Length: 227
Image 1: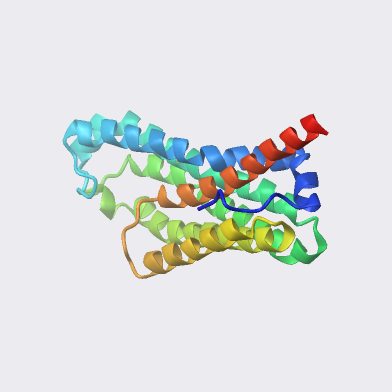
Image 2: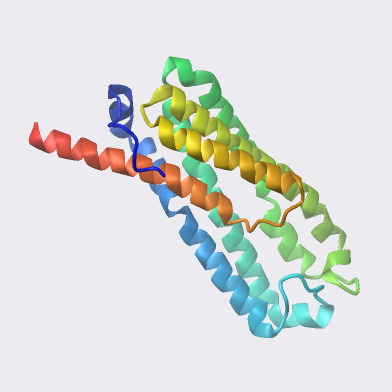
């Protein structure tokens, strides 16, 4: 869905020459790998210990998986922060184009806000592992994160949608911007409707945009080599 875009405009080609744009594109492209690590860690920690994904964890069970619990929550934070960082770098680069300045900086702002809200995620979840209640779900620290997670998730989706708008305005990659933007809206609606979508879904959308920019970089290098 992202390979049918026309060749990049001069503006897009110039942007590809900047280090933040390349880093941002790579971060978005590789973001699914972080969630692969999260899934592997979760499977090893929970399923490997005979605990279901939606099972209420007891004190005895947490004692048995405390280290793995800390690792999987740190990996989850890092996986999302990589995608957020990629969004910030790419949107910030595109925002230098006049007609894309407003949505570009709006994408940067919402992505930063999402990252800030996300920062307490791993510390709170790790601290909650010391709960004294009968089950983990009854711990206030653990329950508090539910609200913070929703806020961070909506801000993250908003930043991605704004990045698509920015890309549509600033470059010739309009097909991918429309498709990924539409899918982002669908994911947001599903999330708002209470459907349990796996967190790694958004990484596929990040990856799609990243691939578009890496392909454009490759075309730019080929053009430069034959010039």
